[in-house]
Amino acid sequence: MSDKKSIGKKVLGWFVQPEEGEEQHDASADELIAKYANDAPPPAPPPEVTLTGELPKVQDGKVDFPAVFRAAGVDDEEQGRVEKARGLLSTLPAVTPKDVQKQIVEAALKAFGYPVDAIIEAGAQEIQALEVYIQAGARDTQSLLADSTKRLDQLEAEMANVKKVMNDKVSEQQTLKEACNQEKLRVQGVLEFFGQDAINKVVAASPKLHEPK
Image (cartoon, rainbow, N blue to C red; front, side, top):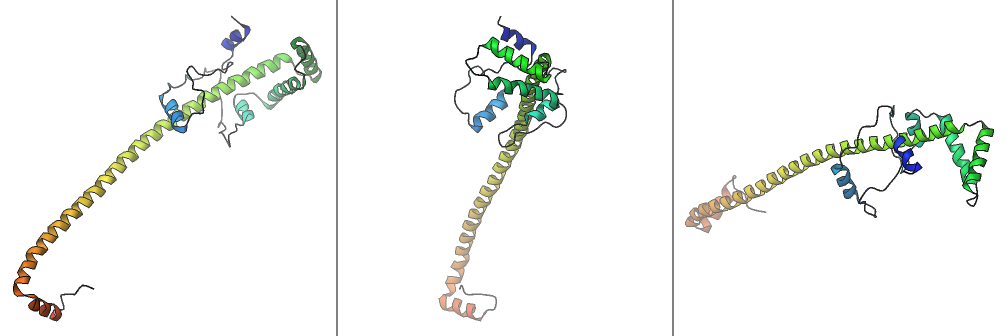
């Protein structure tokens, strides 16, 4: 077993790997919703790895990682040590042998008073914090999707009911119109028996009758 795999068994979230069968294209919103809705809920984080307080939300596509780390108990000083090591690594030429890089970085960190063991511990804590943060976000997402799906089902049922009421009303109006026109024809037959002149005379004299405009 490789050293990386051994470390991965000791540190939660150490490896970031593509999911099995994951499509190599940008998923649509509907695909992502279906994925989160159908995925089994992620396991609860081990009790020794917890995030406290209100967790930061994604803002404009960015995550406030220092806030995530602080929620996991990694203070600003510890985070600064990891960042210092990261900064030193970024300044080393790529052609520098790895063992030489290690000597240079460790010497520089020692000069700054940054114990290597403390940096390793803080870095591992950050990885754990990120994994728990991912799991917490997945649970929140699944909960929201479940609530939203239920609400959509309710809205769809309400829409179907509204459409039924509308269709029933249109059908009722059509029946009303046809029935009234049939009744008008029966009454009209009585009036026409007396002749148009008699009708015109009564209509003109009656305050109850109105000529169409």
